[in-house]
Image: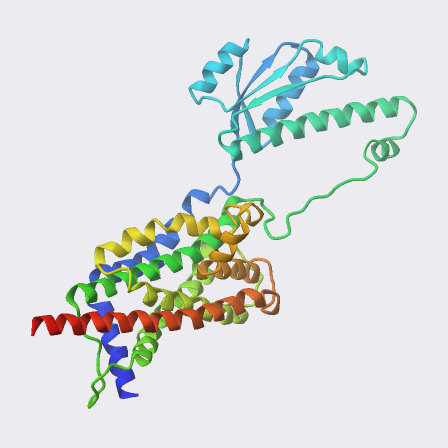
Length: 392
């Protein structure tokens, strides 16, 4: 126990005596997590600028343009005379879509013929494309429904029956866990869990890189000749665990409330789920110590792996589009199971039993990475011994 406490105190002194590691802790907890959600504050993209070419120039065509402009998704920024002018605006990024209302639009509607409205939208940015399409579709569908209901009432149907006849099976779509349909509610919770993983790995890598550059020997118990590697892993791991288990608590009670990302999960079950998540990241960090042999190597190596880790989680890129073998390999990253389980627990109200497979996977990773961390520290000890022999 004395040896365990000595290693524990030594690790605390190493962390708080290293300004770089402290900066990672402070930036990862306070700065990064508070600043990252800022670009997503609007939640939903609104008032995407489009141009309208009204070749019909009738009361009905002007009404359609006004209805499109009244939608929250689209803003009619320009009314142009021809397609050449709208193309110029599109190339200059003044607009992101063009709506063409053809000649005889009102005539075709009143004569019960098909009226076609052409929409050209910038598909290089899918979110803009979706908003333009949704806004225009809502306005056109609303006008189409109004015209059809008026026809039915003119034929002698009362308005209620006319509405039911036009739409016999009404569809009511309500997003259960993202009522606003916002991007922040969707992406921020999962990314914050990945930030926890990457900052923790960077901090462990920096401290380990410093030790490897100096070839500091592992602490040895009093009266002993060999370091107790298992005790070193547990003592050092407990220090990082005590610090980083507070990160998700900070997310839930501070960050989510500031940005109004409310959850419906049970806090006790969430913390219980996060125990193997944080510990598996720590053990993975100890494992990577065999590879990250310098302080400078840890930061770029882990930063450049952040984007693949985001894609492998399965929220930015759908899991169904990821090859099966890659999905299996992604389970080796704690963020894959940890992010999915955390989002389901906190934001979707799942129980711990409903995320049991993610929880079980994290515990398996703990067993695997404890073994690999033990091997990593043993290899490091051999390096130190060989270096001392060469010096002597």
